[in-house]
Image 1 (tube, helix red, strand yellow):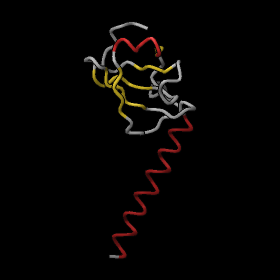
Image 2 (tube, one colour):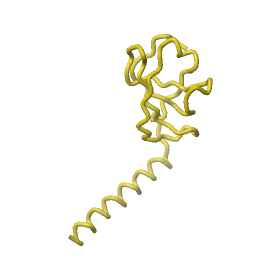
Image 3 (tube, helix red, strand yellow):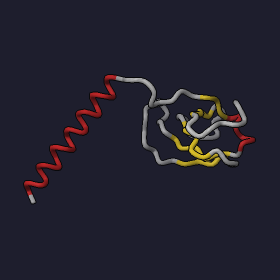
Length: 97
């Protein structure tokens, strides 16, 4: 693991010191600020979990792929259906008022 990750890099804990998943570097100071962006199965999640990791602890991490990279048709359809549902619900709620 490089000792100088940049903001936007992705890391995965390999030593069990943090919950499994992929973390995005959101602050490159010392300590690093990492935001957990996936669950244990590497599915994209908005966890809101922010952790601080001293640079000397980076040996417990390895580089990881960006979970937002690439096009996945299933995720696209899921997002389309979810957005349509919430849009329809908003319209129906407005008529009820």
